[in-house]
Image (cartoon, rainbow, N blue to C red; front, top):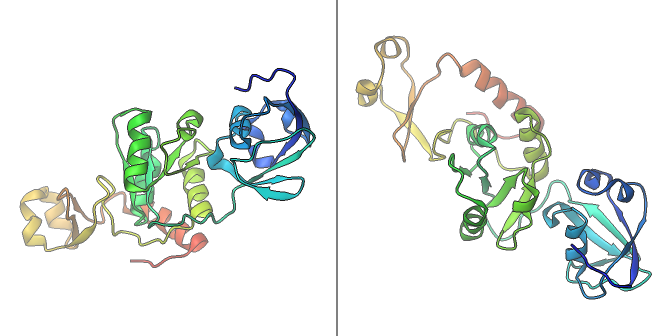
Length: 248
């Protein structure tokens, strides 16, 4: 938090979408903030509750600045929301999800999106390091995690409902969709599997009822269009209809 002692006063406003992060007095138009005269604008924005992952362009008196800008007395600061779709430069678009987003991870994988996920709580430092090491966009509802400096990139998940979470990620990042091509259990690629080759891994009823199978090339899990296929197909069809992609 800032600890100003008669420091310069600036006026700041936040895009409406960012209102959930800031105190009520900062949600409607410009509000006064006293800074310490040394902290960067990025630090000021985060000290007011907004992770920089959620801040788009920063404008000072109408001109764009970087988070490294040090605000001066009397400046008018506008904090805009992120651009949608949000470009992620310099790497293939890949995600990392924290322990609380398992359903979202499985749905992204169902759509063929590279979504790493660890079901055990490995801690914020390990997640941030993983994001940096593999250049993955970390998805989380933990604001503190998204403020960690080690992160390569991150995004706050605004809803606690899986349907809305999925739509938010697809709208924000516009990943390429390739349904039924990725293992929902481990994120590995799927390949067509001959029934005879996987026969010993199947229950008797499955062997008798189904003929088309796929298998993960990493964990060997076998897939077929079973009892839950209609529900999964609805998720896929809704995503393709709204956000595009190629059906399998």
